[in-house]
Image (tube, rainbow over all chains, first blue to last red; front, side, top):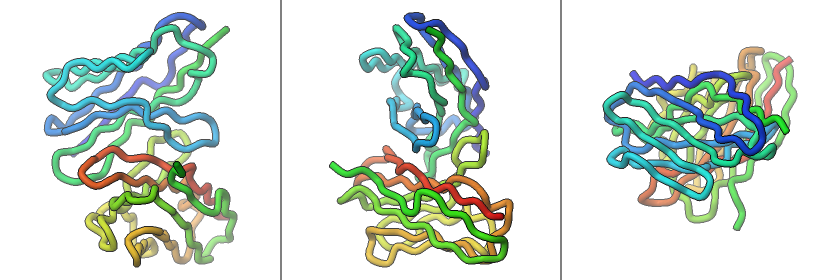
Length: 111
Length: 113
């Protein structure tokens, strides 16, 4: 079955880069997503990558995909206090339209 | 443009009661999804609609949970005989035709006392 795992917590200083990692099990996943959730709020789509890509850059965000190792990462350059939130990795299996989420990584940015 | 909206934002009920949670998707989005998020966890899939029909309801935990989307737009998630374990945030998402990218609403926080 599908499973997505993430580290629980990351703490960085303002201005540093943050790297949030994710591993998944379904090799047939078509898309992989990163969502951000601030306290008491819903999920905000940050970025996504198609499974035949290795990298995608979108302003301060860089997504790297290692399909062989089923490893996905999100790099946030010049991390700001407003980036403090929970970040969820999600995979979209080939068959079916549901998203399978990890448990989330809490990012804390210290000023 | 308007995003996905959900009402109510908070719902407190007593064990054994019936509740309805409403989701208004983004206009023009044909696919609609319900997820449940327990404290400290990621969202878990419940049900997916394509138009008016439930295309995948494999995530509904038991027959106390039911969802409808009679006109292919607004959807209602219905929970009968609520239990304390049903307490969670219920999230709705929608996606436009031909894409898989899901946009989420703010959620309804359900508390069963």
